[in-house]
Length: 199
Image 1 (tube, one colour):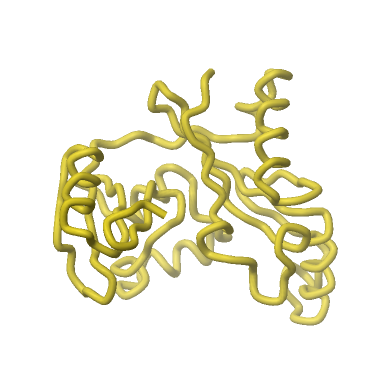
Image 2 (cartoon, one colour; image 1 turned 45 degrees about the vertical axis):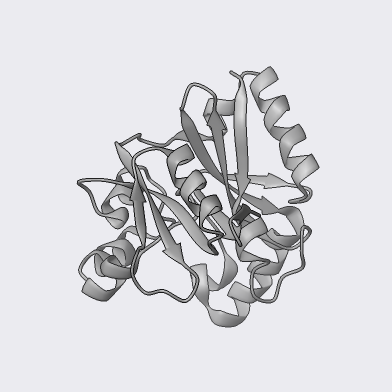
């Protein structure tokens, strides 16, 4: 299993509200292999677990902090990239990777570019390199996202078990047109560009 890319959601979205970078945080982690297979899990730091317990005691969530869960959850010392990479390498070496990370269902996809400040896509491509070349040639700033076709993002994420919600909450959101119509997930491949250059 040769790794092509490791994506750590918090590197794009920033630390959770009230948290501390690397040490009190949680994040989706996506691992993409060179054969195209993609796996996902959610990493929580030890400090974040304790912080969430105290928060839930105060808010009453999870029976006042009596439990905590997340799909594909594992606990780490820190969310620093070097540590996450080391952990993933060790899981693969110990043949435990697939016990922690779940495989993401692969669908046929296209790459959609949204320019900074724009409300609608300005480019759709079948091949990543074609998209990058167009962005570079035109010195564009914005986000390039890989989107599944013939399926909504919410449905795709639900099928891939990428939505960390209680079943009753998921049922509620599934019937919310605004939520379904605006749903996105960091588990989708995406790249940020500034003046045609990938950041």
